[in-house]
Length: 293
Image 1 (tube, rainbow, N blue to C red):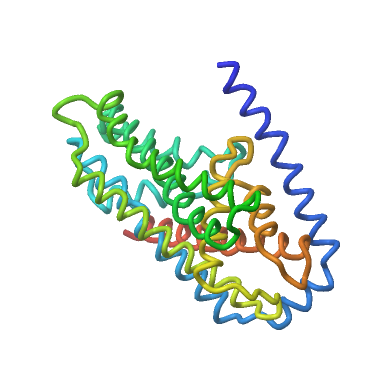
Image 2: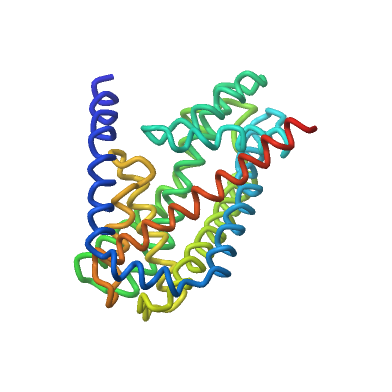
């Protein structure tokens, strides 16, 4: 209980500080950012937004795979409705309320508490493990054994071990026979998460490609690794809801650009606007369909 209060207190304290620093970075780099925005590719920005909207149709797949494998019965329509209806909760202080809202909805629909525990653990655990494993391996190959490269390499190795151990721990500590997760279901879960993050990475690359004057000289694979590793570090930083500030700091530290550290951090933070707009459009479409259907 005390630990939760400390974490929640840190989140409440860290969020406005992170926002303040990002706004300060944007203000200090306002002329550079204005030039970048004036020459930005609206096509790439729009494509990134649409792609993130499409990812919302893939988001329910993990819930369907895990919950059905454990013995509950959840359809894609049911899972997507639960996901879309709760999208605004992503932006409530704390960063956990979208998950909490979906769990409440599933419980009201009769899904077992144990099955939901397994789903929440896998949803968060696999997201962290896969982004750190893939991203960390790429960053390590880029940086070698310098400080950041070594950290990335250790994180990648630890994430791979965690990925192998996760299913066993779930079956041993959370689920009971006959509801334990099979190897096939676990592998399907990994594939679903990999496909989602492949799409998310592509959306980020499209966003950055909208600003060619930012001067990035990295390959698509290197940029993908930086994005995934930075997101993973932000995700496991429990004091930073949705990795706010941490993601931008790590990504900017791993990249070099003529627009400078502050300008790059502010530009990378702009990707959150793409995600916000996508979330809002999907939620509005869901509300429209729900009221007319």
